Structure formats: C-alpha cells, structure tokens
Length: 117
Image 1 (cartoon, one colour):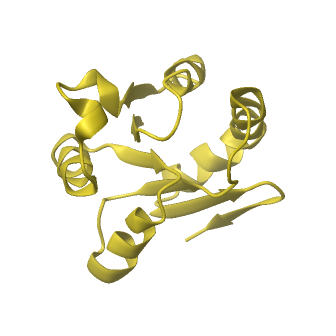
Image 2: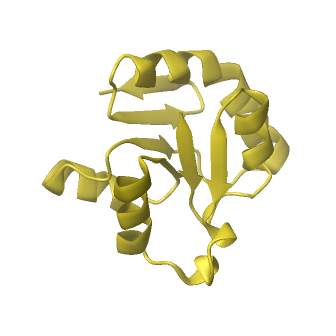
C-alpha cells in the first residue's frame, strides 16, 4: 500500500509505514508541499493511488460528499506527542492493513477504537 501523510502529521510517520512494509511520503516531499491544499493532496492520491493519512476532518467531508480521495486513514486523536501517535498507529497497524486490504475506504483511528467503513 502507498500512503500520503498530510502536513499536520509528523514526517517521522514515513519511517513507521516503511517499517511495516509500505510506501509512505509526507506531503512536504513534494515541491512546496507544506503549502498544498486539500484538493492538491486529493489529486495526488487519485493519480498515484495513495491512501491519505490525515487529522483534517475536511477529508472526511470530501469523502462523504464526493467519494474521494480514494481512501482515508483519519487520525482523530487531537494534539498528542509524536511518541503517543506512533505507538497508537503501531498498535493498530495490523487491523488497519487488514481493513484496507479488505477494500475499506475510510478508517477512523481514535484513542480507544478503530472505525472502519
């Protein structure tokens, strides 16, 4: 699987996804990536078959209203340390992988649960 990590999440997540055997690129890897708006991220996700990893609930709205980006991992945990975020993702990663491999299009990761659509 391929993931594009949105600006408000730390670039260190690239390493976690790579460690789990997947391609991940923080959007700051693109020219002026830190200035990308949601529509640009969606366009990249559609063209390059990326799953969007974000904390931005606007992506949820795009998904519910228009059916894109193709797939989203929405991290709904508020402001936390990178250590906590990495541990939470790592602890739930197997379930996230299984859900996306089973054609889930939207996964919401919360501190105490994983919601899959």
